[in-house]
Image (cartoon, rainbow, N blue to C red; front, side):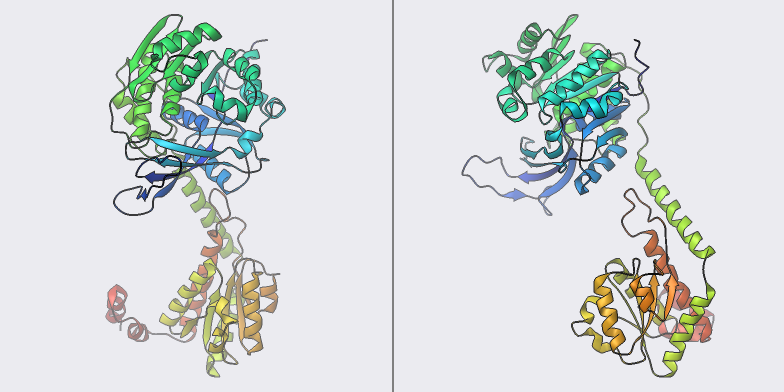
Length: 540
């Protein structure tokens, strides 16, 4: 049966990791201690968060160099998982993930000034992947690829082998990245027989030099080309590429054998250099380069990778440009780098917020605002004052509200909600008006504060997104700030709701300004300096 035309050039299953990268003076040994250093210069923190993982890095560099890439496997619906998926989106990597794992993979990486590093990792959900999971959840996705790439590092060997089996049955080319020596991998991931089957199932096998030596029981001084040749003879692969760090790589294939030197660059962080190499190597092969030039492109990407902290390219355009600057092989045509989706995501968020505010205007009830103005004006005639309060992001809005109301003729104080039940309620006198802001209207700390304020005789104006909430039910007047969507990739952070609450405050201030006949002279008296002071003075 003929396989349908592939919609992806490269699909992969393997490590996808949130990396916490530390800058260390040196990599210490057992029972040693060493200081951490600022990661970005002479001062600042010694740790930064990057996105990494053998397969995710590889796919990111492949995407930067023109391939349509996709990743599949088991993930987790936690904060690190959301960070990982957002990074995949930015890198143009399609993801087909089942989010039922215990947690997303994380790593602690310590990098010394010369770029060498030590890595400690917790594979979490990646290590929970089974052969049945691959077969039942991802076989169709695998069939969309022109090539499958997997690794011996974090995915259980049985699961990786199942992915290889599915790919080979569908006539898809296969790659295995042997990132760590078998003696380290097998106890964590499976058994020797499954590893042997995986290595034999690879059309392209890429071991690190350290792993290659162990596979062959070779002398420590054995060169990379001899190792590549020996491994290909043992496992029957179509091609074997042995990476050799800053030296370069060696390729053994039926129609080419050779050692290819890497460009000389100043290394900042060696993390992910082999992953970048393999992603670019795949890109070169897919776009028609021979073994020599594909290896040159891989070496160029590996060299570019070590010039910056972090392994997954956060800037696809830079990664592509720098790799091509270092590439010395034959010219070739490639697809354009997918546009960074960050810009589109921001405009989408803006569209969402604008749409929500337009809907707010369409259903705006002037009577509610008139009732709020009347409540405040009536309180002022009895000597009452105005206060604004909120918890979390609304606390910042409360400070704005107190400022804008005060500057437009309604003296207003900020009221710290969480301090209210610890003494700050003392700023309230009977007959004062409190404006309380809460999107949900059910924030426990705010409701406790409201109960205390009500007990002291305060009137209440609620600005909320839920007219049926406890806060709304307690209020004398409710101002609508409801939104259906917040905007943004996760749709969780208060964005549209904060904008709606801000507009409710601004609208109320405009009503009070008109109701009291507030003049330019009065505004200037409260705002004598700055550009607004000049404008108000000119209209007196």
